[in-house]
Length: 119
Image (tube, rainbow, N blue to C red):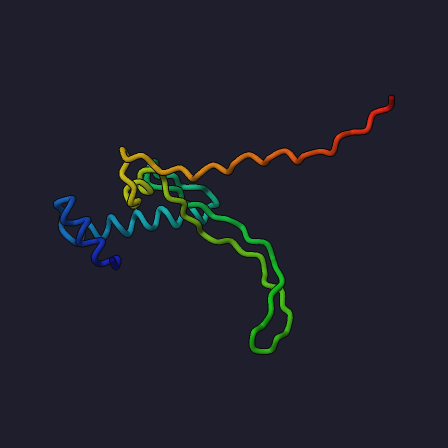
């Protein structure tokens, strides 16, 4: 789904004109961007969390010249899906039992040779 399709769907579900829906969607995206720019975390309960994570500088290789380079430190936006969103996307039904992996059998004790005792 593209942003334009998303705007049309918001307009349809909210019963508002497309132009108003476009304004609302743009404002929401601006709020998310501004919050992340300020270094804050944005949590939409049940839906997920938007946050900024720092990446440390790291070594790399220029694939054209095979020269070793240092990739500079950076910040990147990250989204972690919430429980409600995960459940909505998941193929598992909420009431259906989830199969547990088979337990590994306990290791058998190694047979120890009989200890020779002093008489």
